[in-house]
Length: 314
Image (cartoon, rainbow, N blue to C red; front, side, top):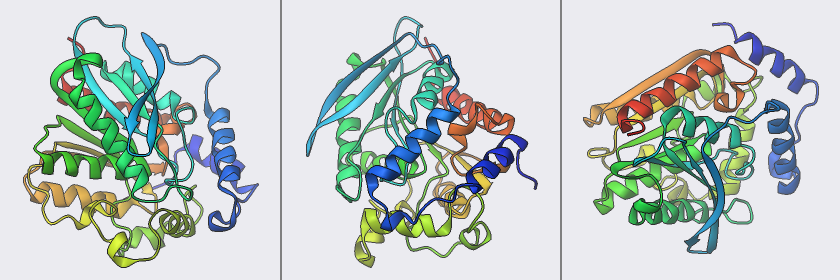
């Protein structure tokens, strides 16, 4: 399938300035580059929501910064804890502000965006532990957030999709209910052999070399670490009892097949799954909806599906 025209134009622009090797680049430089790209994609006027507040939540390594978005609708609403992408290295509350604003507006939910510690300064398990700590805190203090009990979800894109999946598994193991998990183009198996990694190795924003680098910086090269379910959720012993999942992948993404494999594993375990593989899109499409009609439609569909499972605003 051909690329969405808006994404094709963006790729032409990115190809004009090839990115350096991640493993050999200062993480601060990588973060500045992602922030600069996000700024070019952000419309001049933000998506309006009812209220946005900065805060912190206690975590195992100190306070974890969060940004809480509240919809304009009164009364109890669902709550979504969101983990940003960025290869476990880059990404922050600002790079995904447009995404979390739209999530808040479209779903009619309080969205708690989490700025977890990042590799390489803080490799696994630090990001996972921060995300789990914030989700536990929100669940234990739900009246301070959306206040609708039974309507708590986790969500994330790319590395954040991985973190959402492993937090959902932890909540299942702890007997804590989640109403849903939204996983956008997640990485689910660090050492898996997936055709899409070769098929889409170059030319589509995320490369196979990028994946090798960020996964090494996050989890090292010990197979026991890389293969544990908290790093590779597709390696879990069982998927039974997990929260209903909304999974979106992109045809032109090296991570496509492991996202689809995770959806299949959940379905085979009896988990309710809504899965879409978007033919004309690339990795990172949640951030690309301002410049791509296809990304806009895909983002809208995934958020609408999450909203249906959470019941939207009261």
